[in-house]
Amino acid sequence: MKYALVIFETEESRRSIQADRDAYRKAYETWIGQVAAAGKLAGGEALETEHIAPVTVRKASDGSPQVTEGPAQAGEETLGGWFVLEVADREEAVELAKGLPTPETIEIRPILESA
Image (cartoon, rainbow, N blue to C red; front, side, top):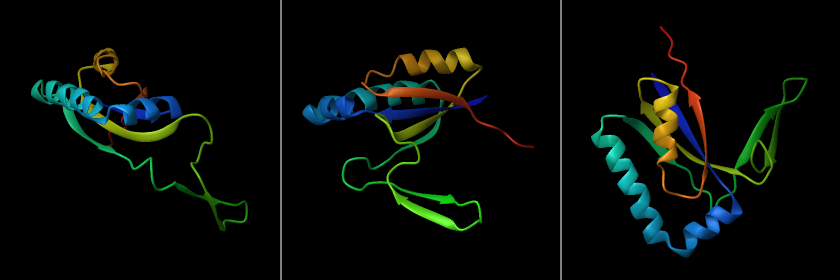
């Protein structure tokens, strides 16, 4: 079964990452290497979160597109990226997420697999 580990950054986690980018990268690369070596990593991407702000497009009640600067969900956390895991079940996805040694928040979501 596939699960997405959706990574959310906060100002605090971003400051921590910026303070020691080399250590952060090494921690991520070690975790990614371990998950990949176990045959559990199906993909993933990081998003640009430091230099270019997101833009949100929503449809108004009349169907016209409305463009606003900023994330779709305003708040303390910002979408930073995701990993896709191929695991036996939700519990395994949770255990792998718990092992990510970085300061971000991780939301675990099953991926809908269509026929």
